[in-house]
Length: 513
Ligand code: NAD
Image (tube, rainbow, N blue to C red):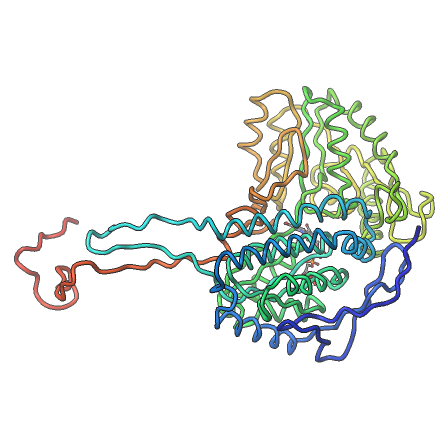
């Protein structure tokens, strides 16, 4: 079933043209499943970023996109959604090659949702929100204009390469901005294809540019660039801190979607079968390489053993192997380095007294094929202050801890520097409502985990970032609001002018203090 591919070059995309880097160098992209080279992209430089930003600025200045007739801009966005659907099989194949994750996840989950996200943002252009025009001073008519910001730099991660690119370009382009996007260097291939499809859909040259290369070179150059008006990152919390510092030079707007460490609370009254299935899907989605993945299960003492037994059975039943095999549930992690990182977390937790309930063995012992594979793993009896509970593992690993009272579970759930996603499993409506109020996360679910909707905001509290993806909130972040005021009286001498020059007119009341 292994898919062998001839090595293809994927030049980057600047001003509507496929181009190599000024460095002349290329980066090889390897499949983590076969370790074969599956494509090459240019190793971009600061000069390439300058070129792309200049193209984006020129496109923005002449208004070829944001002054396009609204109906035409909407049609282009919708056409791009259609092209994604048309090419979904090929794109999902390419995504699977570069990430090693199961083809069925790419094809039937995030890709189906990606085109819906785009079409949702196309609707947002037609629903601009703001205050009503009115005579707020009595002597002027005021109204707001919601305008694009200008040139947006965007940096995307390797876990959902195409999907996260869509979450970035969807609101930015819908709002009329020009974009320069840098995909992760491990997984740039589908993003290059996305730029080509955008051109085919009718996005004008220079409006959507893709510069490939390394984060510390291309991403950093974009974040620091004086001609970039806003920088948006989906990535690690530490990368977010670096980007925020780099952005300070021109005080550009910063939008950060960062790491997560989602708690998963199972109350004594929960439906244990539903919770076990939810935990399995929630922890193993994309091999656990998901910022909202369920990572820490807090389970009431009364149902602790029952939950561990059933969830352990489900984890053991997950089929790990060739990502292109339709019978495979879980492919690889992104790299051998990531496997070693994940294994390290599990080994250290066990050395500190935790107990492996499922998986957890080295690949060679676990009977896995050669490649960056890791078995779905449950580590029980973890302690709250351990690194496996506090830090982002980003692998198919669920840490489990017991609790006695709801207050204790909520306090431990909130005891993290992250604040992206959380869930609670209960059949008691009062417990559910108390948890949704108390849990300090940008997305709290009751009796489900992982679900997202184009219409609703996705974004973190605390060190999970600032700003929202998806929804009208995201669209608004890629716009700026201008207050326009029209003087209505035509009187040259205004009553308040005396506060700046001249004497107070006799008919002016003395202001109260
Ligand atoms: P990463 O931070 O290593 O890389 C993200 C992007 O930033 C890549 O394109 C990378 O090349 C670039 N980059 C790296 N160093 C940089 C620097 N110094 N300056 C500028 N750019 C730089 O993250 P990753 O490992 O690709 O992705 C996984 C992370 O993303 C996890 O922490 C995950 O939780 C997070 N994530 C968050 C969300 C969300 O919506 N909050 C969604 C998906 C992933």
